[in-house]
Length: 195
Image (cartoon, rainbow, N blue to C red; front, side, top):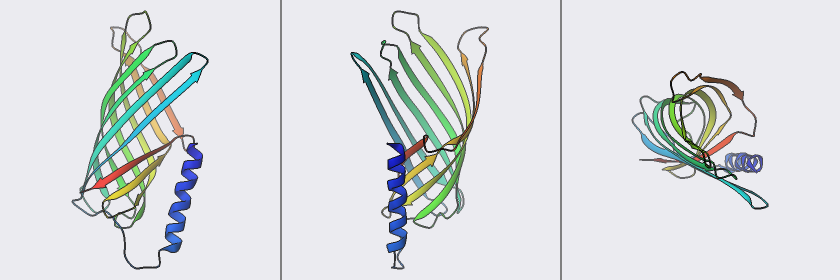
């Protein structure tokens, strides 16, 4: 499904570029612009009587410090409930920067980098809860496309990332992950509103 949505977005971008014969430009960013952005995700799976759900919400605010670079501050809120009634809650924040290759244009490729901290609480069905703290660094390529003067569609594909998660107990060992994922199985979509 993500591949189909990504291909549809590419087709829309392509057709818009081909049909754009007028000199008018829709949208674009400039030095001093402020924007809010965010993404929402929901997933539900069911097999026989077993059902699992997950939900995440990630709002962010950005400010252009020059013509190409925007600083971003974001939040992460997420919940998940597994088929066996295990529950996970995530709350976190991040700080990063995003480089826009052609910010004043309707369409721009982007490259973002940031750090984040997330606190997770795991509540197993019938067991004692556990808390985890995760520190992460990620670099993500993406695109930004204005559909009006103030509203843009945003997408990122994959990431180069490092994370370190540790249980919130004395003597716990950290779980360190390093990953490079640039395939179409890791696409994130969002909407941006420019003030």
